[in-house]
Image (tube, rainbow, N blue to C red; front, side, top):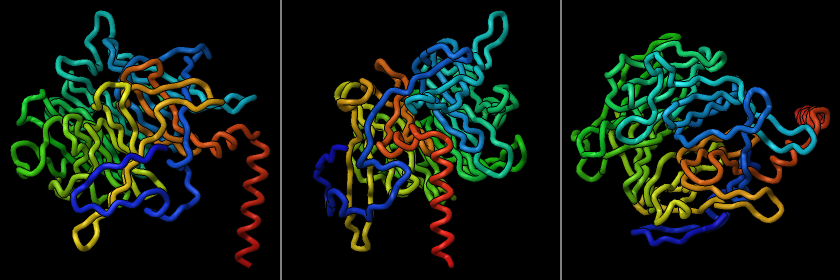
Length: 384
C-alpha cells in the first residue's frame, strides 16, 4: 500500500499507523495484494465477462452479481468458490439474464446513448434479498430475483427516475443517483424506503439546480449509505473533490471527503477500519487509475486529519500476474477481500486480498471447523 502526500489547507496529516488503532481486520488495507479473479460459466469452462459497471455481493445468498454494458446488457449471478487443491478463489456462474432478445423488446439497456449504467445493489433488510439494477437506457431501476435470475418488477414507475446510474442500500433504504446527459441541470440523488416485498416509496430527492453553490452536482455515479445511516457518500467522475457527503435524512449536501481524488467512479465503506475505499478513475491515463483508502477526520477546531493511500495497482512477485485498469465498481466480500470491477484492461474482475485470507481459503473445511471449535472453547473458558 502506497502512502501519497498531498498538501491540504488547514490539514493535520497523520501517516501510517498513528491515524488509527491497529485491529484484526477482515480486510487489512495495509497488507493486501492484487490477484486475478477468474470467472467460469455453468459448464465449468473459463468465460470472461465484458466491460461494465455492475458489482454487488449478497452475504445471505453467497451470490456475487455482475453486469456488463455491452450491447447484450447482461446480468450474471456467480457463486464464490475456491480451488479444492490450492484455495485460489474463482467465480462460477449460477445464472445469466441477457437484456437483448431477438424479435422481442429489450429487458435491459445498460449501454444507452449517453454513458452507461447497470450498477447493482442487493436489498439488506429482513425481507428476502432482491437485486436492484439501474438502467438509464430504459429509464428504470429493475428488481431481480437473485435466486432464479428473473425480473420481478421495478423500484419505481418507469420514467419517474430520469437516467438512473448508481444505487446503494442499507437496511430498508435505497439511494439512487441519476442524470440524463452531461449538461448541468439534470443530475440528482433520490432516497427510497422499502415498505413491502416489492414496493418502495420515495423519501426525498435532491437535484440541480436546487443545491448549494459550493458543491458541484453534475454526473453522480456510484454511492453508498454509511453504516450509521447518517450520510450518503456520492462519487463524481469529473471533480477533484470527488466524494460528496449528503445527509441521509434530507439529501442536503454536507461536506466533501477532504482528499484530492482526480475523479471517482465508486466508493465503499470499510467495515472495520474507519475510512472509505474510493475507485479513482480519471487520472492522467487509465493506467494511472487507483483504489485509494481515505480517512478524513474533522476536529472541533475546524482542522482535519487526512490519511490517503493507494492500494496496489499490479500483482507482486510470487503471485499470479495481474494489473488493473480503470476501476468502475467495488464490493467487499467477507473472507475473500475487495473485488474490483474494471472498465478496461486485461482483467475485468480483480481481487485485493491479504495473506491471512488466502491462507484461510487454502485450509480444508475440516481444519477451519477445528479452528472454530478451538476459538469458541477459549472464549467459553474466559467467561467462566
